[in-house]
Length: 167
Image (cartoon, rainbow, N blue to C red; front, side, top):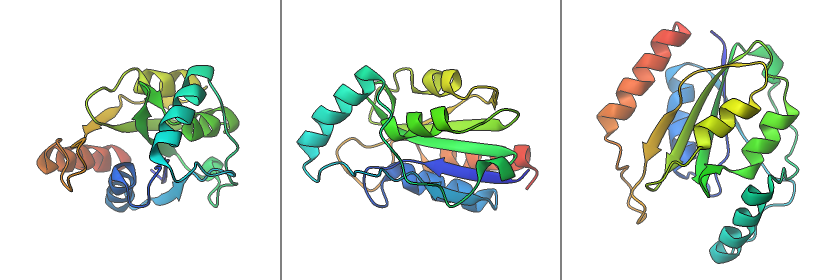
């Protein structure tokens, strides 16, 4: 099963990106980071305030064109941090602007303790796709290098996805 891993991460090499890279390697797939046309400010508090407004209003900020064409893939893994109990707005933009009809979508989310309705929101917006049950990775919300989700659990998930994808 040809797989594209699409993800959004506010920070370079952030937790969502780390999971996305591990997944792409495990399934021998391609990877695509969603990039905003107008990036968020560098000030974290400003991002928190702006992202709350965007999530609550259902905003779909403009994203840069993808390097990979999702139409060329069987499975699209969609990764997002949990922002205000939902997906990052860039991921909503991707889902609303991409024809996922007939695709298999594998959602995954990173969170600091509250997953909210992120996976359900992905499912609602992946119109025409078969959406698999999502996986939620808990982080150390205090910035430690390790995840609160044990690495062995991440490896089990990666193995299950590899088997599903026929790798």
